[in-house]
Length: 366
Image (tube, rainbow, N blue to C red; front, side, top):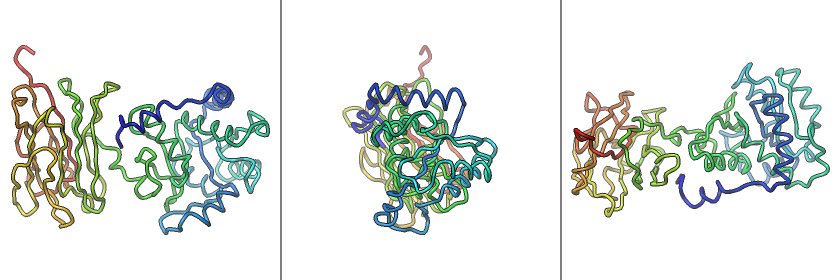
């Protein structure tokens, strides 16, 4: 997920034309300002979605991709509780197997939720299907809480475009097609159509160190091989807005299952030369390796228990390489730097997350 890559740059530049924006604003003002509604729910219950689910989507035991409106509302109420008293429903109203009044009655009677539809604000028969879809998409981007399904490209792009435009991870986006009694929050910024992957919070890149005033932005990519996941990549950028993205990988749930077995750092040697090494579970310490060389194992069930990174060139006189880690016990070790070994207190806890940064050295008069 390269925040400053070409795809993100193009996506964040998308805007609605004036006509559609004017219509969307009428609904937006009525929903988000006048009625202070926080929740927007995309209901994929249309007749064509039913056909698509049966003919295209392969059935899997961990997903239900054709929920009835009452089931979607039940999951939402289980998640938000009393905070969900009203919501805007997005769907193709001209292609539903139920009337909006039927769904509205069920929502109010069974869940004490009052539902709004865009047809409450405009005459939808005056607009073509594409225009109505674009209006829906505009409203989804303005929602405080958005609910959809990861099998819908609409839901995925609602998260992805928000990610590109706001330039940080998209939060408060939920899916209802997982096999749980309530909604699941997605952490993938809209990039996956698999509910198991979309809801894994390793995409959230939880920072282990706060941003430091001396930290500098370098084009760095950290790739780690995580057990039961595979290779995962994260990268920073020299782009100036709002600041360089953190170089951190790892997964914080189920530490017995997801552990880092090896890693590699990619930095253009013309910018900075580095080297790094790792400590394996069997106690063996690898040799120092240079930029872009993999350090560790793959598929051998051998997680790392420590690592060290240092700047190899003359830049070490001006810069510090600072890194941090979280281990399987939950212990977080921070502010290790310049070739020092980063390990847990016991020295045997498995590595589950790591973060790397580069900072200007502190001198007495600086």
